[in-house]
Length: 343
Image (cartoon, rainbow, N blue to C red; front, side):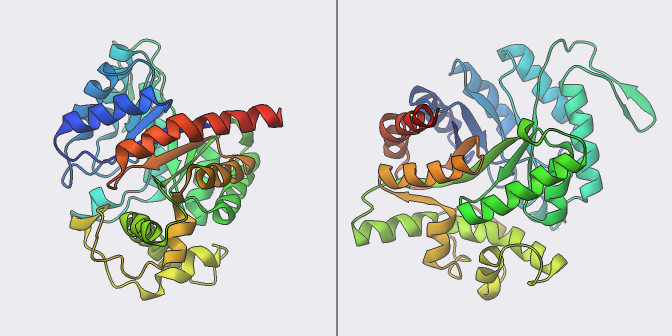
């Protein structure tokens, strides 16, 4: 299993760069950032510094969208970074959440998402593409490589992921929900004539390593990560609105939003978000990775056995360096032993 870290672009940018460098030191191979430039600093300005401070780690957005970013400019950004640093980028993309909604906009259509994935991937892989009646290609781009990983929750978005995505990003770490979503993506890939095993499956969720046996510390960990249930709730609310509460989406994913009362995107992804009181402790525990290194390993092994290839841990809490250290010293080595034992 690969490991990634997910960072917000809060100033100073040097802090994001340092956490990326530290993550690589501890064995993480991906460094992702949010992409909401009105809420945080512009990520594509920071990516060159992250890449320059490291040797192998890949960087990219978790996630960008087709509405607030011009597709050809995005492709050029990735191809330029690849030319400078040697194919060390990855593109997470979805319909759009905070970057769109903070402008009172709406997520893009699935049609636009599908088209944008094709255009960005072709151009950023040094190939030509048809767009608006013109054949486009970067004349300066040679041997650039970029994978498009799609973030999705709803049935139609999952289907699209299986049909066109190089990877699937699931932003929650509940094994039961992950099993259902991975199955939907793989079935869609098979129906589209693709090899479902060629898709990279990435689970992204807050990771907080601490004393799992202390009730007080356990409660503190939950409060530090409760914001994530609110963020996921925005997507779930869209699903329920479109498909109804009795759709094929697992009840564990839909039931908890019944008490949801709106959301302020100016507090998006922040600890202490005042719009996440509806998120119960059970959901925080199910969606996140909390507790001792042993608890993290047990949950990661369950996810890996479902076919998850990467865990990307959000670090929006007060225990960043210690969590990275314990992952590097305890969790990542234990997961490597798990793979060896299975082999």
